[in-house]
Image (spheres, rainbow, N blue to C red):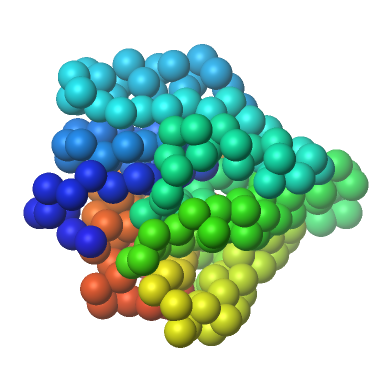
Length: 243
Ligand SMILES: NC(=O)c1ccc[n+]([C@@H]2O[C@H](COP(=O)([O-])OP(=O)(O)OC[C@H]3O[C@@H](n4cnc5c(N)ncnc54)[C@H](OP(=O)(O)O)[C@@H]3O)[C@@H](O)[C@H]2O)c1
């Protein structure tokens, strides 16, 4: 797969109602004739995304799927039929949805901890498992993790469960790459640095992020398209500061 190809690809991305995921979906729409299914809870955000994609490309194929990834309902029955309605086969799955509570460890509620593990880690595992049977040869599962989950990176107080959930996503990527190494499906993980989004602004008020969302999204979208030519089973730190 590469961007110069005129082939229409089927792209599934989570967490696309705002922030990095929104910009990644918009970038795919701007590229041409890809089919993009976008998952998030907020229907309004997905509607904004659809409008933004059409503004980029009047013929954009953007299919919004309003869905709470933290549900305990089986994805096979609760989500997969909605995806398959738009994308009978999938070329690229980008597990990008995430949530963050910046709180001292002992002040984290049970609900905070469960939500971060559900959305940041389990959702990616459950969606990947559900979608794998639909993946086309040459498919790419790209997980969006964080520098906080990268081994040996600088750690920050208040981010214990968030970083642990992102580290779990890193380990999942490496394990799936091993388990599926003899298949035509590639798994990679980007552990990204700070990006100016709602998540960052809420968690770190007054701080300056390293990147703008559209800038990071350009990298993520290009990597999702072209990364498998050079990387399989890799965990790549995407940060201008030293881990
Ligand atoms: N921003 C940073 O500095 C930074 C740094 C490192 C890693 N990351 C990672 O990058 C990814 C994108 O982050 P962002 O900064 O763009 O965050 P954001 O602006 O808060 O967007 C998060 C996205 O995830 C979706 N989401 C959250 N909970 C969900 C749920 N239960 N079900 C379905 N969708 C859900 C949100 O949509 P709804 O609210 O509509 O559901 C939203 O579209 C995340 O995985 C994040 O951990 C971000």
